[in-house]
Length: 241
Image (cartoon, rainbow, N blue to C red; front, side, top):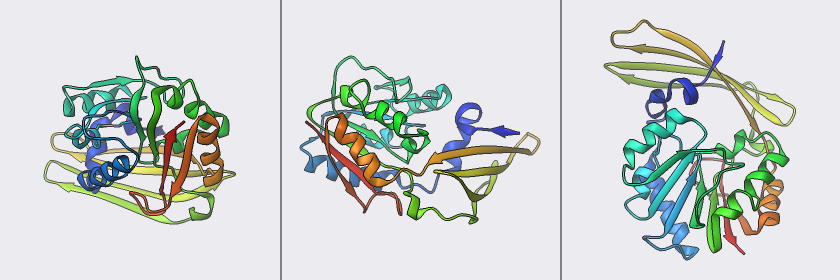
């Protein structure tokens, strides 16, 4: 059976990704945004914000808001940024009241868009480009490029606390232009029977130039910065024309 923590077990997200150094990533993001003219106090929107790990630290620098496709994730994020607007929406069709100074889309969330048409929809004047004021900034952390994907590589991630122990194991595969991972979870919680479930992840291995061109077509002068927040992922950094 295929399941997903995003939809049905969002409380496990922060546990399995506890290795992420959100404070350090936000320091780097603030430096990049500063180079783009985005100053402290500016209005910032995070697309696919998940449980609000970045927003929790960004809120001390900027006037933040965020959205995610999964209501459970949004509910957790809202507890971390109680003074900010966090809402449920799709990154290819969301609407906001007025454009912001900067839009972020991090942790390879854009990789879940299945093809060029979907990426163009997200970048377009109906979504990202509509959400950013002229002169504003865009920072997108993509998924792996085709050359960086390795098939048949085993992975294991552990979370080991007294009341919650998790083992997540998967191997990597490829189906055409998409990376495929079936992640097997074993979850032991105090007072509950051990759970086993499988998450199916399918992410588009979009060529870097293809994605950069989609942002250019939408109205962003865009460059790819290979030295990103995580290994091999890099960042697309854009300036709204």
